[in-house]
Length: 147
Image 1: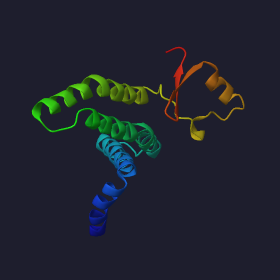
Image 2: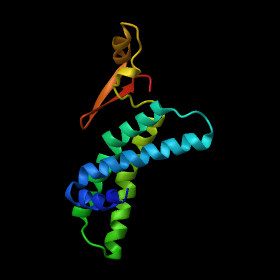
Image 3: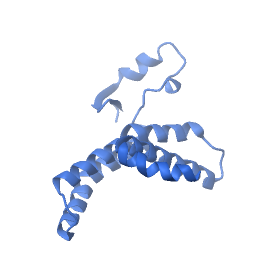
Image 4: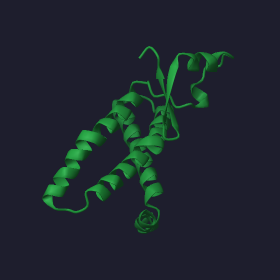
């Protein structure tokens, strides 16, 4: 166990993006599992897998790119610069991040996973029929037309 703590900082320095994404996936999964445990119900590993998938595909990548962009656009640690970074993060990055969070929790975000398709032969046709598709990086985001 102690060897992981020595290897992690080197991996984070050498491979910052994958380390960041995997750290997000681990933290999101642990938070979801802890929330399920505190509620007292049975563990829903399917839900935890969805949370981890969203952390890997969106949250980890978005935060890494967004914070690097913010740091390059506003370099420094002076109080004015830090305040400008916080204001930019809250006015631009915050709404994007929160909308993705609420979209995921309201079941509007549909990750095209095989276990989410219905077993009938017309399931794929019916599921794609009344949706509007927006590309988000390489993650397809499906919004129902009724929404």
